[in-house]
Image 1 (cartoon, one colour):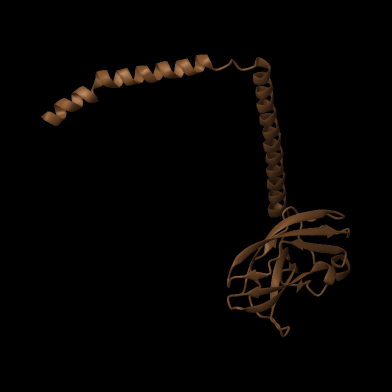
Image 2 (cartoon, rainbow, N blue to C red):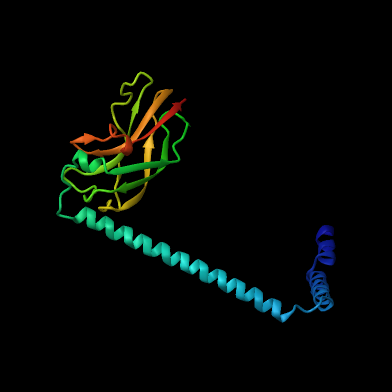
Length: 212
């Protein structure tokens, strides 16, 4: 009872209201004592804020258009009736592959992504349409030059397709071997059920990678 009585005196409603009113008066006094902001500076700050919003809106619009374009290309590839014929070596030699972001060291079975650019100087459309789709993939070799992994691992579709006399950028997902060691990765194109193109130097990114 004594504690309750003291609480009512020290932290009751009247005391809390007095503290809130005192704080309110202090805030008002601080605001009145401060100089008024320059209207021109406020206008400039507002203009900068709206300009940043406009820039953000333009970027979002560009991204939306890019997504719409990729979606249309995806539907065109998946729904096309035109088959991907065998890619002959003469046309393949006119395709160049460049890779950025190849790692030097990986953990066993680690997945990673590589930025790949393809330049197609041929007059052939290269795509991932059936019955012999073309994909980007990698093969692993050991220090003695023998195939180290029987399964070549994940494939990356050419979305959008690589147009004749065109260029494309693709983000390729790969997976390291499960056992530790030094490996050589050949990143290239593969036409399913037909052939790999890692024997063509211009169409292959070659990297020495330590797994462990």
